[in-house]
Length: 419
Length: 217
Image (spheres, rainbow over the protein chains, first blue to last red):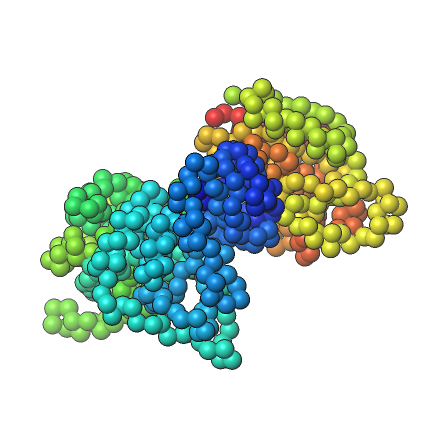
């Protein structure tokens, strides 16, 4: 048996539409013989069969759009018959499922620990998994079904994140018994609700966020920074930057100072790989950009080697291209530390979630004039909260504090030679 | 590696389809290298593979089409409905995107880049509009489509491609809703420049841009 998946025809391709099945169920097919046609964007593509054998099952009909890596068909390979009967039983849609059969892998809403939904309960919305680790072998699916486990919940250790038999055995062994509680339906038929399918981006953000919370031990430290000097420098140099065709933003100051300080504290520019700490020599700053729907984090590579003016240009360019959806793959890859800016929307501070596999993320709050005490006098100063979210598995509270203290010093005494 | 260019002049749509099919197989077999076909079609409306319902985007009746001397053709390319005809430079790159260009979005963006560069040589500033493929030109907010893109990729060998309006009779576009996009107009290089653009000059500009984008791997 061999699963045929919706191929990813490009890094930014998230889904594809099956335009035509060239082969029918029961047809024999050679390896690399055209099997089906898909359409993405303005491109139509003919997809060859990954294996030779018999087309046993078509799971996604013509005209339907599914995320990449979704299993669209199953091919039976001659000679591999031993498991076929049981696997076919496992992959066939459960007969109790009402109305729409599970045409592809289904993930339950994230709140459901173990979907032991009984027949007769209304079927909740079944978002289609676009995650690799949902693609698993029939054996794993059989075990998952028998134990009421949602495969999409597991972290696969197999090739391309596939959930292996070992993974699922381990998961079942450690599962707490109370997690088998039946899920409460989100809505009842007749409720006044509006249903909307999550976009691919929404699902990816959702997956990434939950995965990050499950992976990292998040802790936070907040420091308050006086932006008087940066304010003055900005006013002083603004015109020069504008003449050079860019604008001198607070974000650029923060990006410059952050990149320079990271150099002194390599543990915030690292990843964990099992029992190994991977320190990244490049400081690639991700800068979160809010889109009309969702968000994206383009990356400034080797940010510490860039001047403030270069940073201004990069940030402006990346944000612009993010909003017009012109980012390239390499623009969003390889980040080692993330900056996010809840202050843009007036937020005093943020408690952001780490972007995996990084270990730290800095949130910049709004810069507001506040009364503060300086030399025993109450004065008005432009103040800003910086919050560092970091992974306590690697970075202790004292380390996080040291990083923020250094960043605060650097911002409050920002060197005008850098401009 | 440079790209082998074949300037074919006016070719029937069906004939060009068959030629592409042959060349795709030859390219796959390695008998030929990357090739660019440049040609022009007699008036024809073509339908993309995705939209079997694209005929709803033909607004003219069968009689009107016949009167205008326009035939209708199904194709295997991506995209919706489009019009081809005299004065339009059609380009069909037959390229093997393996091993390092296997990205359909990138390929479409690269073709857009080719066309933007080609028309820049005539002083026309072409642009992309997010969400709509093709190349657009004109005043900000009122851009019109100067080139359409519809691509087929068969195991990473490309066919179909682009259609750049040089001196196309734009009235023929009124027979269809171009690419199924109702609220945007269509324009041509001559209309944008207000000058006569010889087909060969446009071809030369396209060849140069194709070479720059796809030629040096």
